[in-house]
View 1 (cartoon, rainbow, N blue to C red):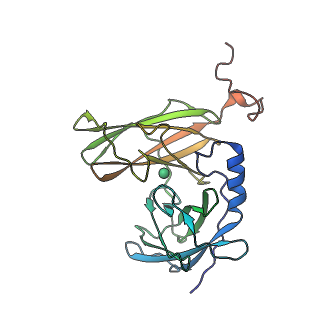
View 2 (tube, helix red, strand yellow):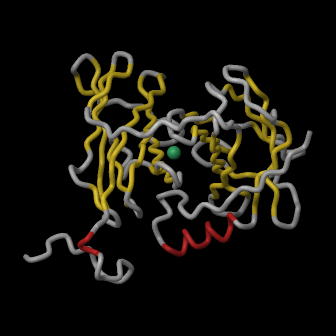
View 3 (cartoon, rainbow, N blue to C red):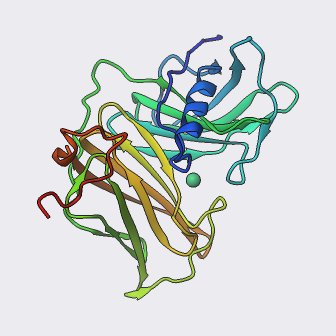
Length: 275
Ligand SMILES: [Cu+2]
């Protein structure tokens, strides 16, 4: 059965597109493409591998067949359950003759899920589209709990997230991850998909999506800017000794009252009022 799902427009794409022109161009691009789902069951059966096939269609109704490699892959597919309790990052294969993209997906629960498709059509800039799938009326979303412990254990590793104590909207912030193994700092992280780390930031509720990379490719120091107050979950992936790890963290972002009376577009950040 053929099902058509029109993807909605995402306003925030790659955080690396920091200049406004790039963002505008991406937003424009994203209205020119949508995801057409070819095969997917009506209902998701948990823990059963499903073959998911889809195509990227242009607004002229043409199938996009040629994609540029971006972070070592033709396409990145990030799937989260809508309450952000589950995360997957997959790489569909794309048949260059038909443009049919295929991913084998096992969903741990019946959803609902949001799928984010990141790709670069030939000669274009990168695009992120999304669609929603699955779910039933009995779904009870779990509320995000703000992380109290900065350090988490992942196998033999201890990973520590360093975030500013207070995070305000519309303020450029830096956060980092420290990785230790047997209490020794790990200084030889490998590149994973062409970067030392990949951080995907999602806002609870609206699922605003940002995918960002380390500021330099030496360590896991990221920069970002939260546009809205609320809770955000950060999923960071990195690799050591061939093993891909994922550390998750939840922060709360508060409204920046320093900027209330000014136009955030034109005013420089007022970090120290009264000084
Ligand atoms: Cu990435």
